[in-house]
Image: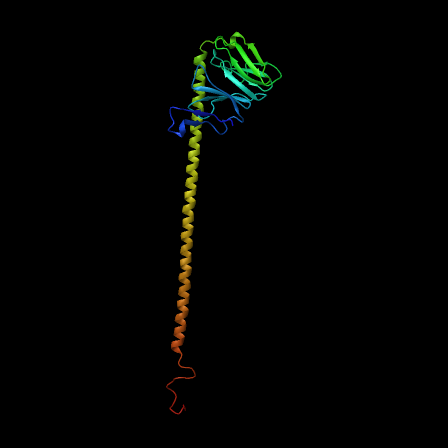
Length: 254
């Protein structure tokens, strides 16, 4: 749950054409209820899930922008067909929130309480972009009309939003590359430490083996010396009970 999958039917050679987006901190904490491409910049798309709306770029596996956490669980969302930086999200507490990224990215532009029931869907008219249809869990559809400023394209808005999204994409890509480099450097460091530990262990084993060989050699030398001493004593002693000497006569007298 909360993971974005991209399926490319033209390229099935690699992983059957399926690309998996961020499965770590960038993924939603629950099911994704809505996903839609930006009508003015098709490379970028928005997902709605948990308490946030997240904007992604198809060439990057992590989200480039994330809204602040809303007060209630989000249930649906869509882009404005006439303004590149405006999108709508519905909440479980019956509130419709409107974001205007051309104006500001950290605060909701407008909130409207539609009803007490949980909202479940939202859609806009393709013509003027002023009519908003909102459905709730009870099956009721409410038709709203937003002000002209939320529907009429602003001067240079498309280029400004495109530049902002590209800037966020490059920044996130650089952070991803930096994180990849840090993980690679750490892996090399761990490998070097492991290699040094192996070398140190081999040195200790070689030293221990040398000590064992020295102990064995000393032990064999001790045994050999003991055997030599015993042979020397045996050679100096005659048959049992006999003493030889030149100072005795044949009859045993001195």
